[in-house]
Image (tube, rainbow, N blue to C red; front, top):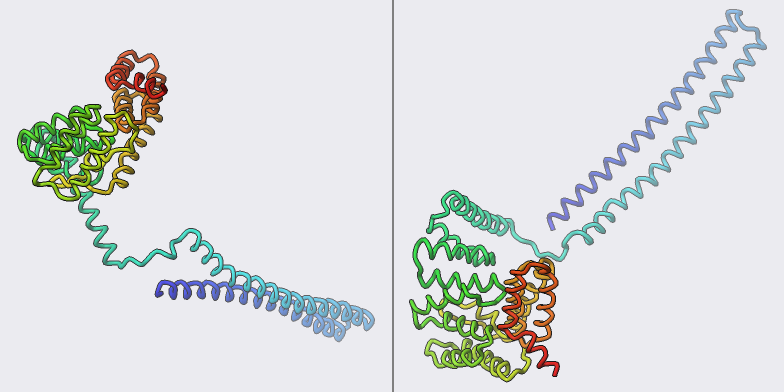
Length: 385
Protein backbone atom coordinates (compact mmCIF):
# COMPACT_ATOMS: atom_id res chain seq x y z
CA UNK A 1 0.00 0.00 0.00
CA UNK A 2 2.83 2.39 0.85
CA UNK A 3 4.32 1.83 -2.60
CA UNK A 4 1.10 2.95 -4.29
CA UNK A 5 1.00 6.11 -2.13
CA UNK A 6 4.55 6.93 -3.21
CA UNK A 7 3.63 6.38 -6.86
CA UNK A 8 0.60 8.67 -6.49
CA UNK A 9 2.73 11.46 -4.99
CA UNK A 10 5.26 11.14 -7.81
CA UNK A 11 2.49 11.29 -10.43
CA UNK A 12 0.99 14.38 -8.81
CA UNK A 13 4.42 16.03 -8.80
CA UNK A 14 4.95 15.38 -12.50
CA UNK A 15 1.52 16.76 -13.43
CA UNK A 16 2.10 19.83 -11.23
CA UNK A 17 5.43 20.53 -12.93
CA UNK A 18 3.74 20.40 -16.34
CA UNK A 19 1.00 22.79 -15.19
CA UNK A 20 3.54 25.26 -13.85
CA UNK A 21 5.60 25.23 -17.06
CA UNK A 22 2.56 25.81 -19.28
CA UNK A 23 1.31 28.63 -17.01
CA UNK A 24 4.67 30.37 -17.20
CA UNK A 25 4.64 30.10 -20.99
CA UNK A 26 1.19 31.72 -21.20
CA UNK A 27 2.24 34.54 -18.91
CA UNK A 28 5.34 35.19 -20.98
CA UNK A 29 3.30 35.40 -24.19
CA UNK A 30 0.88 37.87 -22.62
CA UNK A 31 3.71 40.06 -21.30
CA UNK A 32 5.32 40.25 -24.74
CA UNK A 33 2.05 41.39 -26.35
CA UNK A 34 1.44 44.16 -23.82
CA UNK A 35 5.00 45.46 -24.27
CA UNK A 36 4.31 45.96 -28.01
CA UNK A 37 1.16 48.00 -27.23
CA UNK A 38 3.21 50.23 -24.90
CA UNK A 39 5.63 50.96 -27.76
CA UNK A 40 2.73 52.18 -29.95
CA UNK A 41 1.52 54.49 -27.18
CA UNK A 42 4.98 56.02 -26.92
CA UNK A 43 4.90 56.63 -30.68
CA UNK A 44 1.68 58.69 -30.29
CA UNK A 45 3.40 60.88 -27.73
CA UNK A 46 6.33 61.35 -30.10
CA UNK A 47 3.95 62.43 -32.90
CA UNK A 48 2.43 65.13 -30.62
CA UNK A 49 5.91 66.37 -29.73
CA UNK A 50 6.91 66.63 -33.41
CA UNK A 51 3.70 68.57 -34.20
CA UNK A 52 4.40 71.01 -31.36
CA UNK A 53 7.91 71.70 -32.73
CA UNK A 54 6.51 72.28 -36.24
CA UNK A 55 8.13 69.22 -37.72
CA UNK A 56 4.73 67.86 -38.85
CA UNK A 57 1.68 69.63 -40.25
CA UNK A 58 -1.70 69.04 -38.62
CA UNK A 59 -2.83 66.84 -41.47
CA UNK A 60 0.34 64.73 -41.30
CA UNK A 61 0.06 64.42 -37.55
CA UNK A 62 -3.55 63.23 -37.74
CA UNK A 63 -2.67 60.67 -40.42
CA UNK A 64 0.23 59.34 -38.34
CA UNK A 65 -1.94 59.16 -35.23
CA UNK A 66 -4.58 57.21 -37.12
CA UNK A 67 -2.02 54.68 -38.43
CA UNK A 68 -0.39 54.12 -35.03
CA UNK A 69 -3.80 53.85 -33.38
CA UNK A 70 -4.90 51.22 -35.90
CA UNK A 71 -1.75 49.14 -35.30
CA UNK A 72 -2.12 49.45 -31.53
CA UNK A 73 -5.73 48.27 -31.56
CA UNK A 74 -4.91 45.38 -33.87
CA UNK A 75 -2.00 44.23 -31.71
CA UNK A 76 -4.01 44.51 -28.51
CA UNK A 77 -6.78 42.39 -29.99
CA UNK A 78 -4.25 39.78 -31.19
CA UNK A 79 -2.70 39.58 -27.74
CA UNK A 80 -6.01 39.00 -26.00
CA UNK A 81 -7.12 36.39 -28.54
CA UNK A 82 -3.73 34.59 -28.46
CA UNK A 83 -3.60 34.48 -24.69
CA UNK A 84 -7.11 33.10 -24.48
CA UNK A 85 -6.39 30.52 -27.18
CA UNK A 86 -3.09 29.53 -25.59
CA UNK A 87 -4.74 29.21 -22.21
CA UNK A 88 -7.52 27.03 -23.52
CA UNK A 89 -5.02 24.91 -25.49
CA UNK A 90 -2.77 24.52 -22.47
CA UNK A 91 -5.69 23.47 -20.33
CA UNK A 92 -6.72 20.84 -22.86
CA UNK A 93 -3.18 19.49 -23.20
CA UNK A 94 -2.72 19.39 -19.47
CA UNK A 95 -6.02 17.62 -18.99
CA UNK A 96 -5.04 14.92 -21.47
CA UNK A 97 -1.58 14.55 -19.93
CA UNK A 98 -2.92 14.45 -16.38
CA UNK A 99 -5.31 11.64 -17.28
CA UNK A 100 -3.04 9.67 -19.59
CA UNK A 101 -0.09 9.33 -17.20
CA UNK A 102 -1.81 7.25 -14.47
CA UNK A 103 -3.99 5.39 -16.99
CA UNK A 104 -1.00 4.43 -19.13
CA UNK A 105 0.97 3.40 -16.04
CA UNK A 106 -1.91 1.18 -14.84
CA UNK A 107 -2.26 -0.49 -18.25
CA UNK A 108 1.46 -1.19 -18.48
CA UNK A 109 1.58 -2.59 -14.95
CA UNK A 110 -1.35 -4.94 -15.46
CA UNK A 111 0.20 -6.23 -18.70
CA UNK A 112 3.86 -6.40 -17.72
CA UNK A 113 3.81 -6.48 -13.94
CA UNK A 114 2.62 -9.00 -11.39
CA UNK A 115 -0.21 -7.39 -9.43
CA UNK A 116 -1.32 -10.73 -7.99
CA UNK A 117 2.14 -11.67 -6.69
CA UNK A 118 2.22 -11.69 -2.89
CA UNK A 119 4.65 -9.45 -1.12
CA UNK A 120 7.99 -10.90 -0.09
CA UNK A 121 9.41 -9.15 2.97
CA UNK A 122 12.73 -7.50 2.46
CA UNK A 123 14.26 -9.67 5.16
CA UNK A 124 13.14 -12.80 3.31
CA UNK A 125 14.56 -11.60 0.01
CA UNK A 126 17.81 -10.69 1.67
CA UNK A 127 18.15 -14.06 3.42
CA UNK A 128 17.28 -16.00 0.25
CA UNK A 129 19.70 -14.02 -1.90
CA UNK A 130 22.42 -14.34 0.69
CA UNK A 131 21.98 -18.12 0.92
CA UNK A 132 22.03 -18.50 -2.87
CA UNK A 133 25.11 -16.31 -3.12
CA UNK A 134 26.90 -18.36 -0.49
CA UNK A 135 26.15 -21.62 -2.32
CA UNK A 136 27.21 -20.17 -5.67
CA UNK A 137 30.39 -18.79 -4.15
CA UNK A 138 31.19 -22.13 -2.51
CA UNK A 139 30.66 -24.03 -5.77
CA UNK A 140 32.78 -21.51 -7.68
CA UNK A 141 35.64 -21.86 -5.18
CA UNK A 142 35.57 -25.65 -5.31
CA UNK A 143 35.40 -25.69 -9.11
CA UNK A 144 38.32 -23.27 -9.33
CA UNK A 145 40.29 -25.45 -6.94
CA UNK A 146 39.53 -28.59 -8.99
CA UNK A 147 40.61 -26.91 -12.23
CA UNK A 148 44.01 -26.20 -10.73
CA UNK A 149 44.21 -29.47 -8.76
CA UNK A 150 42.08 -32.13 -10.50
CA UNK A 151 43.53 -34.86 -8.23
CA UNK A 152 41.97 -33.30 -5.13
CA UNK A 153 39.68 -36.12 -4.07
CA UNK A 154 38.17 -34.16 -1.19
CA UNK A 155 37.02 -31.46 -3.59
CA UNK A 156 35.23 -33.98 -5.80
CA UNK A 157 33.74 -35.62 -2.71
CA UNK A 158 32.31 -32.29 -1.56
CA UNK A 159 30.88 -31.10 -4.84
CA UNK A 160 29.35 -34.40 -5.99
CA UNK A 161 26.32 -34.32 -3.65
CA UNK A 162 25.85 -30.61 -4.39
CA UNK A 163 25.67 -31.27 -8.12
CA UNK A 164 23.20 -34.09 -7.50
CA UNK A 165 20.87 -31.84 -5.49
CA UNK A 166 21.12 -29.17 -8.19
CA UNK A 167 20.09 -31.80 -10.80
CA UNK A 168 23.38 -31.40 -12.66
CA UNK A 169 23.51 -35.17 -13.02
CA UNK A 170 26.32 -35.53 -15.55
CA UNK A 171 28.67 -33.41 -13.45
CA UNK A 172 27.56 -35.23 -10.31
CA UNK A 173 28.39 -38.63 -11.83
CA UNK A 174 31.83 -37.38 -12.85
CA UNK A 175 32.47 -35.96 -9.38
CA UNK A 176 31.44 -39.18 -7.61
CA UNK A 177 33.56 -41.25 -10.02
CA UNK A 178 36.63 -39.11 -9.34
CA UNK A 179 36.04 -39.23 -5.57
CA UNK A 180 35.76 -43.04 -5.69
CA UNK A 181 38.95 -43.25 -7.73
CA UNK A 182 41.01 -40.88 -5.61
CA UNK A 183 39.70 -41.52 -2.10
CA UNK A 184 38.50 -45.07 -2.42
CA UNK A 185 35.04 -46.52 -2.86
CA UNK A 186 32.55 -46.16 -0.03
CA UNK A 187 28.85 -47.09 0.03
CA UNK A 188 27.88 -43.41 0.08
CA UNK A 189 30.02 -42.48 -2.91
CA UNK A 190 28.98 -45.55 -4.90
CA UNK A 191 25.29 -44.90 -4.23
CA UNK A 192 25.70 -41.28 -5.26
CA UNK A 193 27.41 -42.31 -8.48
CA UNK A 194 24.70 -44.83 -9.38
CA UNK A 195 21.90 -42.32 -8.81
CA UNK A 196 23.64 -39.58 -10.81
CA UNK A 197 24.61 -41.94 -13.63
CA UNK A 198 21.07 -43.33 -14.04
CA UNK A 199 19.48 -39.88 -13.97
CA UNK A 200 22.06 -38.52 -16.40
CA UNK A 201 21.07 -41.31 -18.82
CA UNK A 202 17.31 -40.74 -18.66
CA UNK A 203 16.56 -43.57 -16.25
CA UNK A 204 18.63 -46.24 -17.99
CA UNK A 205 20.85 -48.46 -15.80
CA UNK A 206 23.89 -48.57 -18.07
CA UNK A 207 26.96 -50.74 -17.59
CA UNK A 208 28.76 -48.17 -15.42
CA UNK A 209 25.81 -47.83 -13.05
CA UNK A 210 25.32 -51.60 -12.98
CA UNK A 211 28.94 -52.31 -12.02
CA UNK A 212 28.87 -49.64 -9.32
CA UNK A 213 25.63 -51.09 -7.91
CA UNK A 214 27.23 -54.56 -7.83
CA UNK A 215 30.24 -53.20 -5.92
CA UNK A 216 27.87 -51.39 -3.54
CA UNK A 217 25.97 -54.60 -2.91
CA UNK A 218 29.26 -56.43 -2.27
CA UNK A 219 30.16 -53.87 0.41
CA UNK A 220 26.69 -53.87 1.97
CA UNK A 221 24.67 -56.97 1.02
CA UNK A 222 21.52 -55.59 2.65
CA UNK A 223 21.40 -52.40 0.59
CA UNK A 224 17.86 -52.27 -0.83
CA UNK A 225 18.63 -49.49 -3.30
CA UNK A 226 21.45 -51.51 -4.90
CA UNK A 227 19.19 -54.56 -5.21
CA UNK A 228 16.46 -52.42 -6.78
CA UNK A 229 18.84 -50.90 -9.32
CA UNK A 230 20.15 -54.31 -10.34
CA UNK A 231 16.63 -55.68 -10.70
CA UNK A 232 15.74 -52.68 -12.82
CA UNK A 233 18.82 -53.28 -14.99
CA UNK A 234 17.65 -56.85 -15.66
CA UNK A 235 14.18 -55.61 -16.49
CA UNK A 236 15.56 -53.06 -18.96
CA UNK A 237 17.76 -55.72 -20.56
CA UNK A 238 14.72 -57.90 -21.15
CA UNK A 239 15.67 -60.47 -18.51
CA UNK A 240 12.16 -60.54 -17.15
CA UNK A 241 12.36 -63.86 -15.26
CA UNK A 242 15.50 -62.78 -13.40
CA UNK A 243 13.99 -59.35 -12.67
CA UNK A 244 10.85 -60.98 -11.24
CA UNK A 245 12.96 -63.19 -8.99
CA UNK A 246 14.82 -60.17 -7.63
CA UNK A 247 11.66 -58.09 -7.17
CA UNK A 248 9.88 -60.93 -5.29
CA UNK A 249 12.93 -61.36 -3.04
CA UNK A 250 12.83 -57.64 -2.27
CA UNK A 251 9.21 -57.89 -1.13
CA UNK A 252 10.32 -60.30 1.63
CA UNK A 253 13.12 -58.02 2.91
CA UNK A 254 12.49 -56.94 6.53
CA UNK A 255 13.55 -53.35 5.80
CA UNK A 256 10.74 -52.83 3.27
CA UNK A 257 8.29 -50.06 4.11
CA UNK A 258 4.66 -50.09 2.92
CA UNK A 259 5.45 -47.47 0.28
CA UNK A 260 8.39 -49.50 -1.03
CA UNK A 261 6.34 -52.68 -1.05
CA UNK A 262 3.60 -50.99 -3.05
CA UNK A 263 6.09 -49.73 -5.63
CA UNK A 264 7.69 -53.18 -6.02
CA UNK A 265 4.26 -54.79 -6.46
CA UNK A 266 3.57 -52.37 -9.31
CA UNK A 267 6.84 -53.44 -10.95
CA UNK A 268 6.10 -57.13 -10.50
CA UNK A 269 2.72 -56.76 -12.17
CA UNK A 270 4.20 -54.81 -15.09
CA UNK A 271 7.10 -57.22 -15.63
CA UNK A 272 4.78 -60.24 -15.56
CA UNK A 273 2.80 -58.68 -18.42
CA UNK A 274 5.99 -57.81 -20.30
CA UNK A 275 7.15 -61.42 -19.95
CA UNK A 276 3.89 -62.52 -21.63
CA UNK A 277 4.56 -60.10 -24.50
CA UNK A 278 1.81 -57.68 -23.50
CA UNK A 279 1.99 -53.90 -23.81
CA UNK A 280 2.08 -52.17 -20.44
CA UNK A 281 2.16 -48.67 -19.10
CA UNK A 282 5.61 -47.12 -18.61
CA UNK A 283 7.35 -48.70 -15.61
CA UNK A 284 8.16 -47.01 -12.36
CA UNK A 285 11.87 -46.98 -13.07
CA UNK A 286 11.96 -43.24 -12.64
CA UNK A 287 11.22 -43.63 -8.98
CA UNK A 288 13.92 -46.26 -8.47
CA UNK A 289 16.51 -44.54 -10.61
CA UNK A 290 17.27 -41.55 -8.50
CA UNK A 291 14.75 -40.71 -5.82
CA UNK A 292 15.61 -43.40 -3.30
CA UNK A 293 16.55 -42.23 0.14
CA UNK A 294 19.26 -43.51 2.46
CA UNK A 295 17.24 -46.65 3.12
CA UNK A 296 16.16 -47.14 -0.47
CA UNK A 297 12.69 -45.62 -0.05
CA UNK A 298 10.78 -45.13 -3.31
CA UNK A 299 7.71 -43.11 -4.17
CA UNK A 300 4.55 -45.19 -4.27
CA UNK A 301 2.63 -42.91 -6.64
CA UNK A 302 2.49 -44.98 -9.82
CA UNK A 303 1.06 -42.10 -11.83
CA UNK A 304 3.92 -39.84 -10.79
CA UNK A 305 6.46 -42.52 -11.59
CA UNK A 306 4.85 -43.06 -14.98
CA UNK A 307 5.03 -39.37 -15.79
CA UNK A 308 8.68 -39.29 -14.71
CA UNK A 309 9.81 -42.13 -16.95
CA UNK A 310 7.78 -40.81 -19.88
CA UNK A 311 9.51 -37.47 -19.46
CA UNK A 312 12.93 -39.12 -19.39
CA UNK A 313 12.31 -41.10 -22.57
CA UNK A 314 10.79 -38.05 -24.29
CA UNK A 315 13.82 -35.92 -23.41
CA UNK A 316 16.17 -38.59 -24.77
CA UNK A 317 14.15 -38.84 -27.99
CA UNK A 318 14.10 -35.04 -28.33
CA UNK A 319 17.86 -34.80 -27.84
CA UNK A 320 18.50 -37.44 -30.48
CA UNK A 321 16.10 -35.74 -32.89
CA UNK A 322 18.17 -32.56 -32.55
CA UNK A 323 21.56 -34.32 -32.67
CA UNK A 324 21.46 -37.91 -33.84
CA UNK A 325 25.21 -38.60 -33.87
CA UNK A 326 25.05 -40.58 -30.63
CA UNK A 327 24.87 -44.36 -31.20
CA UNK A 328 24.83 -45.09 -27.46
CA UNK A 329 21.86 -42.76 -27.09
CA UNK A 330 19.96 -44.57 -29.86
CA UNK A 331 20.68 -47.91 -28.16
CA UNK A 332 19.33 -46.54 -24.89
CA UNK A 333 16.21 -45.21 -26.61
CA UNK A 334 15.49 -48.56 -28.27
CA UNK A 335 16.00 -50.37 -24.96
CA UNK A 336 13.62 -47.94 -23.23
CA UNK A 337 10.93 -48.45 -25.85
CA UNK A 338 11.27 -52.24 -25.67
CA UNK A 339 10.97 -52.18 -21.88
CA UNK A 340 7.88 -50.03 -22.20
CA UNK A 341 6.40 -52.46 -24.70
CA UNK A 342 6.44 -49.80 -27.45
CA UNK A 343 7.94 -52.07 -30.11
CA UNK A 344 6.85 -49.94 -33.07
CA UNK A 345 8.56 -46.93 -31.51
CA UNK A 346 11.71 -48.98 -31.02
CA UNK A 347 11.65 -49.98 -34.72
CA UNK A 348 11.16 -46.35 -35.75
CA UNK A 349 14.05 -45.33 -33.49
CA UNK A 350 16.25 -47.88 -35.26
CA UNK A 351 15.30 -46.45 -38.66
CA UNK A 352 15.88 -42.90 -37.44
CA UNK A 353 19.27 -43.90 -36.03
CA UNK A 354 20.39 -45.46 -39.30
CA UNK A 355 19.32 -42.36 -41.19
CA UNK A 356 20.97 -39.96 -38.72
CA UNK A 357 24.27 -41.86 -38.54
CA UNK A 358 24.57 -42.07 -42.32
CA UNK A 359 27.92 -43.46 -43.45
CA UNK A 360 29.43 -43.84 -39.97
CA UNK A 361 30.13 -47.57 -40.16
CA UNK A 362 31.31 -47.97 -36.57
CA UNK A 363 28.30 -46.14 -35.13
CA UNK A 364 25.89 -48.09 -37.35
CA UNK A 365 27.44 -51.37 -36.23
CA UNK A 366 26.95 -50.36 -32.58
CA UNK A 367 23.30 -49.51 -33.18
CA UNK A 368 22.61 -52.65 -35.24
CA UNK A 369 24.26 -54.85 -32.59
CA UNK A 370 22.09 -53.29 -29.87
CA UNK A 371 18.98 -53.74 -32.02
CA UNK A 372 19.82 -57.40 -32.59
CA UNK A 373 20.39 -58.03 -28.87
CA UNK A 374 17.08 -56.36 -28.03
CA UNK A 375 15.25 -58.12 -30.87
CA UNK A 376 13.87 -54.83 -32.16
CA UNK A 377 13.15 -55.78 -35.77
CA UNK A 378 11.98 -59.29 -34.92
CA UNK A 379 9.69 -57.98 -32.20
CA UNK A 380 8.10 -55.52 -34.59
CA UNK A 381 7.42 -58.27 -37.15
CA UNK A 382 5.83 -60.52 -34.52
CA UNK A 383 3.65 -57.67 -33.29
CA UNK A 384 2.39 -56.98 -36.84
CA UNK A 385 1.45 -60.63 -37.27
